[in-house]
Each structure stands twice: as structure tokens, then as C-alpha cells.
Length: 356
Image 1 (cartoon, one colour):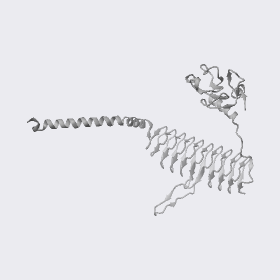
Image 2 (image 1 turned 30 degrees about the vertical axis):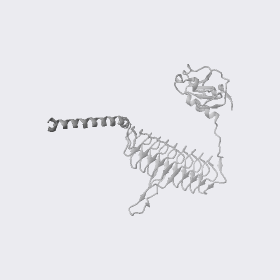
Image 3 (image 1 turned 60 degrees about the horizontal axis):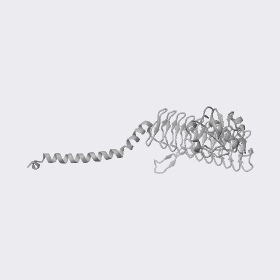
Image 4 (image 1 turned 45 degrees about the vertical axis):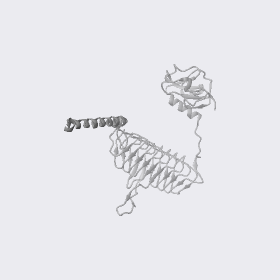
């Protein structure tokens, strides 16, 4: 696809500086763009070395930030460069629909299932007894929805997702490939010396606008549901154990592990590979740094890091002290040597034989 820059200006509501008829074939990041690409700079273009920064034909810039840009670049001036560039990228990369509307003849759909309007069900999907799919739901190939699962309007479930019985998924959710909702919780009665599976009568509830990453797992509650609040986003390979209650609009990054019965407030952020022990509470707005080992309750808006996790400033002081440890050890060795010499001299002075 080749389009003149003027067409992209119309798409984004921007203003062209330079040649409006230059032809653009693709979008690319700043340092990989070539002579048929358009790229963008969000802030501080004056700090770029434009001779090496990019080979792009055109650059999307914030209006008022074009003063130091060489004339060899055509410019598209907009209010928000990132937003405009995303529109352009979407224009050059239109989505290709791979899931046909309707129910595939290769799918297995129980007679008791309730299917809404404009629902798509792909090859080899299994829709169990009494499942309810609201309008606009998209079920990709290989998905398994067990008995009594309810899926809200316009939710998309990608290939090979498995949702166990009685789970409820809200509207406008996205479940990525191979995630599992409602598997048994890791709970056992070991009092007799044999690990006997504990109660598994609960379910999983996702509120509206939740996104679950590929290969993530959310276990069912023992008697109640494991909840994921409205707008929460869960990254790939995350483990959320039984009876957890996650608040609204949490951001749970890759490879996080959350043990059973944890409660979080709203807008909590857990960075990559955070581990949270069972039965604790994380306050609203808290940020847990990457690989934090969280062993106790976290107050609202706290920022904690480290293993075991402690407040960010405390951890920074610890790290600063550790960085000085080699120098401190050297100083201690030198002081010990001096002390040994002083003790020897003092002993010599106190020894009567030394005066004879």
C-alpha cells in the first residue's frame, strides 16, 4: 500500500510541513524506519541527532516541536503524536477476520446452550450444557466452555481457552489463548498423612472489560468465587489462586503468582514475577516492584520492592549501603590490623621485661 502524506494528514487531522505528495508505504519505529516509512517522536525532538536518528521519509510530531527538524523530513504536525501514529499504523495494518460468523459445523454445541445474536463459534469448540453466550461473543477454535458457563456481550475468547463449570465472564472481556479459568484450587487436607483435595464448589467471576493473558490460570474458589474486578488486565503466565478478590483496574504483569485468599483494592500494579503470599491485603493504588516477595499487608498507594518486600525508599537505602560494603570491609580490615598493632605495642609497654 502506498499513500501520500496528505491522506494520512486527513486521517489524523494533522498539518503537513514539507512535501504533502511524498509516498508512504509503512509505519516503523524511529531507529528502524527507512525511506518509505513514517515514524513518530512524542517529545523533545530537539535532543535527537537527526543525522543518525532515523532514515524515515516523514515524521509525526507534536505541533510546535518542529523547529529543529531538518528539511529532508516531511512532517505531520498533530496534537498527540502517539495517538496519531497508532491511527496510521492501524490504517496500514487492517485486521483480517479469521473467525467466520455463525456456528461452525465442526463445533459441538449442547442443545441446552443459549446463543445470542451475531455470535461466532469456531471449529472444534465445545459449548457445554446450559452455557449462555450473549450477543456478539466470539469463540475461536478449540475453546471449551463447560456446564453453566455464562459469557457477556462482545467478549472474545481465543483458541484453546478452557473455562470450567459455573464460571461467569463479563461483557467486553478478552481471554487469550490457552488460559484456564476455574481449575481446582491448590488446597488439600493433609491431617491424615494423605493429601485429600479440599472443597472445590466455587467458581471464577470476571467482571466487564477484563483481559486475561495467554496461559494465565485462575483457580475456582472453595465455596465462593474467585473475583477479578472490572477493567483489570492480567498478563501472560500469571497464576491467581483460589478465593482471591482482585479490585477494579488492577495491572497484573507477566509471571506474577498470587496465593490463595488475597484481596486487592483498585488500581493496584504488580510488576513482573511478583510473588504474593496467601491471606493478605493489598491497598488501592499500591505498586509492587518487579520480583517483589510480598509477605505482609500493603497499605494504599505504597510502593514496595525486594525480597522480602519493603518500602521503596527503605530498599534504596539498603542497596546504597550494600554498594558501599566492599569499601567498608576494606576499612574494617585496615582498622583491625591497626588495632592488632596497637594492642601489641600496649602489651609491650606493660610488660616489665620490656623495661629491663
